[in-house]
Image (cartoon, rainbow over all chains, first blue to last red; front, top):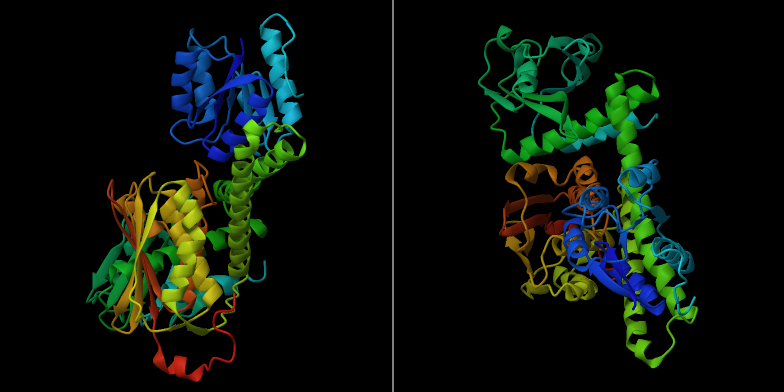
Length: 134
Length: 403
């Protein structure tokens, strides 16, 4: 069965290209446009990984990540933060909020997939995932 | 920082346009001493003796404007002693004191006095407040460069500067992400089979949209840089607003369509030409429309209206978006205002658009303002004076439609 990735970003174009990259690599993709609806979808669909933007309306990524990690239902889902921010302590803050790792925008598509594969497979006890086009 | 005094002078002059001022000045708050320090005076008073004058917070009208956090207008002033220094030699008839804020923090007071009775209009108060706030910011900036001033202000300026840099970085990185990834998805053969054909075009459209967004950002940054240097080099030609509004509406329609927003034009064909800098005017309308699109929900509508009003052409861009809080209205054209709100989120463009639009309209001798009702939408207006004499003088030597 395909692994599910929830992509949370307020920018529709970013969602569009990330979704394409993930689908080309054999992932199933769910999407949300702000932190709050991201949490809703995480609770409802239990994705294998959440790719989370930081600067979003309604609820930002830090807060969303903290809430996901505080909820027993979602705390086990790894969160990979990706952001265009240049705040100096962003990685530290993201890690403190419970993120597994951080990727800076703009990113290299292959690197993104590599990171996601690593995290998803690590979680599933290191089993090798078919990553299609990589 | 040699240009700061000139810049302050320029800003304050703009801020009191139309008011026949006797005297004016800027006090800055000294938090340590709980005092107001008169930092800048212009007009009839001897500036040297006045600079450095101090008032306790709450003392005089200037002090009260701070302690009560509201603007104060006095008419028919007679008593010299009543209002203490700010401003008083006994020759004033009307006095205006406005509290100055940066990022919601009270930093000073701006005052104006007139020799004759003057009924300060809401617009004049707003315009003097914005000018005073910019001047206060510049004074604080100057203090920092010269090693004066309290640290919280230094922090504030540093924060503003790094906020701006961070915002710009974000606004470059986000579109670059789409451009870079979109292109590698197409070029690296990630998208190969037939199933993906349709999506290829939509990636290209997304890339085009993000490139447009970068171009708008760069235009706005360039305009900001020019304004910071105090240069207003207008190339005035007769401009047909009917044609210009058509062009801009067409330019913005892909963005609007994407969000299912309808742009309706209600512009008479008989609208006379107006003397203006076409490119700059176009930027104003693009910025206003961009702003309207940004705050209008999907399936919303935007109405562009234009018409003559006395000797001016009045343009209104109306949206049915979320609206703006009443108390925020006078501040939306303020650079700092945009900065501080857009750090929480600007989804398209960096929020300098309205500030730049105001500067351009000001330089044309026009006015710009906003009306809004929460939940119902906003109307942004601007006027351009239709000086017929000027129009006749400028013959169409250059192509007025040159871009």
